[in-house]
Length: 482
Image (cartoon, rainbow, N blue to C red; front, side):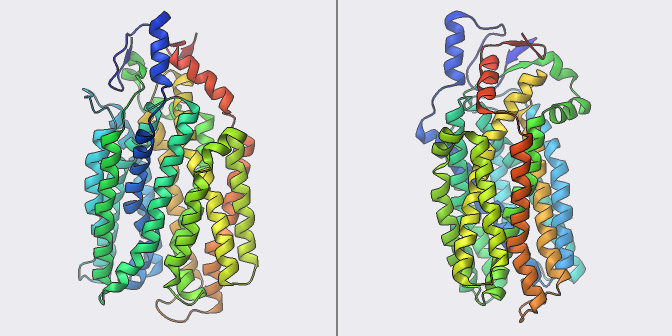
């Protein structure tokens, strides 16, 4: 038995024919208004005001302000991110099993409610009670684990939403662009505004708390704009008998028989760990290698401001070269820029130029990744006959969490290995370690990601168009293409 269960559009359980089939294709491939596309991007804009704070400033807050040893901070990040990664499939499965879908759709209500809880927990993570060192470490573990769990129920439905807004390749590229624009926009504002707010207060604990609270409120507003102005337009046909029988082995099948998804997972492990390592080490690099923590907002403003301009080029680049070639080109440019930045002697001018080139080059494939994810969700349905947006996106998000854990290990681990001491003049070895984490690691990681996508990712735009046509025309039955 097959039925349509996603989106406000009702559709018959049988294969559509004639005019009926044409109307369904219009729904599947419909052109989205710019209001809807931009509103979708506001979701990641809101997300950035909560997610990016943890990636960029929690390491600094816990080590320098809360006096938690760097080794313990590395453990907190690594363990909680791995915990979060294993929570993602559970969250995805629960979202996939939602019944009694209302007029607001399957994903949007879950996203909105969870984003409010996420905002509250974001503020909690930048709060530290007067406790012993062991108590501080336990509090940090508990707060960040709770944050990560709620983040799964916020980000998975948001990421899955794009796959049911449209199946049009160009429209999805534009959704990916607005999403990445929202993400970089949030990074730009938090990167410029967070530290100045903190420095207003004599007590840094108060500064971090107030800055986090302001950013969290903006985050909720961003998610509300997304929730209010987007729609789930694609009526997804499901094989309900197959899904009733689906168990853990079936979920493994959904993931491990989807080769394009596995490639995106591996690519993301390296690209996101590169980006997060860059963001986490920037405040350390500016304070110690450049000698002025106040330079951090300036560097972030230039780097992320240029990235916003770069991602606006994604639709044009994708139209000219396709998603795969554009992504690989960006990764290779980022590889070269970061390696040069490590080799050249530290200089504020060359550093800003090269870190900006590297970040812009990384922002482009990161933006395209969101279009890749929507494509591999449809590929999984086409290949296996079972559509699992939540579990597929959760598998992708698993790689992001593992990448975040890897970035934390690299960042905090290098500080430990090179003898970092808070708020003092650092040794030459420590300065080299900070620079290596800031530039060398991202360079190597982007080079590996380029190899993975260029050689192993086989889902071209032309192949995807055929898959989308097959799905929209109902040309599959019981998991088999007719």
